[in-house]
Image (cartoon, rainbow, N blue to C red; front, side, top):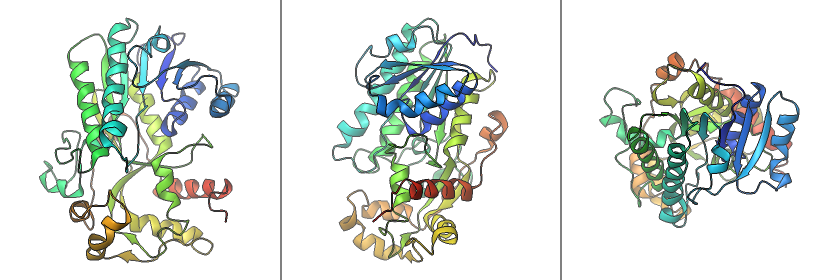
Amino acid sequence: MLEYNISSPVMVTGATGYVAGWLVKRLLEEGFTVHAAVRDPHNSKKLSHLNELAERSPGQIKYFKADLLSTGSYAAAMQGCEVVFHTASPFNLSADNPQKDLIEPAQLGTRNVLEEANRTESVKRVVVTSSCAAIYGDNADLKDARGDRFTEADWNNSSSLTHQPYSYSKTLAEQAAWDIANAQNRWSLIVINPSLVLGPSLNPAATSASLSLIRQFGDGTMKSGTVDLGMGAVDVRDVAEAHMAAGFEPSVQGRYIVSGHDTSFPEFASILRDRFGETYPIPKTTVPKWLAWLIGPFLAKNTTRKYVSRNLGLPFRADNSKSIQELSIKYRPLETSLSEMFQQMIDQGVFAK
């Protein structure tokens, strides 16, 4: 691990989030003091799952009020920290106002955290949670990739404010991070680029778009069929392990695609149907691309005809070898991530009528 003083705290932004919860768990297990930057440090209900983790671990957790869009709001939380994990960022694929709801929070939040790192002498390393969305915008972009799959050398050049604005926001935010990091030489920047994150949540009130998506496979939304959308997928616990290695391994550098599987919606449906199909309306068929092109815009505003043309029926392929070799990630089976996620939803009464 990185030469690191275990008595020095580490900071995690967005500590109540889906990925952050598992990261905080691992940090507490290793005995770290976690400075958790949250919107409301006095909301005991939202923080109860983190407090329970701390009670069962050798580490401890301290809460700090922070606002992603307020300059200087991370100063107190970052004080004395050598490693900073910036996981806070919106994940909303159908924002009403992409500029306000996606672009500004992602860019300004990243700038606020990294510029605070510039002002905090103790910081040695910053780990930013980006996304594969900063590497590619549409599956059609694969034809322009340097090989037969996306790598860390690729950047999303096809998204915009009007086409794939979420992916555009992740791209702009990561580019801002690298601009700030490259303008100084005291701390190093490591970026984690996960694909679609799956698996159980530690926060019972989690509202991740991943959870909303998988719920649609079981609540009847897709009972008439799913679309043939190729994508990458990764277990949330593997993403947390990637952050741990990124934070403390001395040799890591640059960006890391963290994606365990090149998969698709039909494969999701097949996995879930095998285990839960007798009880829940898991989709059995695949909607033809021409039909999705025709009716998609009427069903969801982000499902434009351009999106359908450039994504459906086209594969996603990513090279995860850098994460395996340098972060020592052993990816969990897709079946495990999906099944445990879906079972947790059942246990929580998500599908109760």
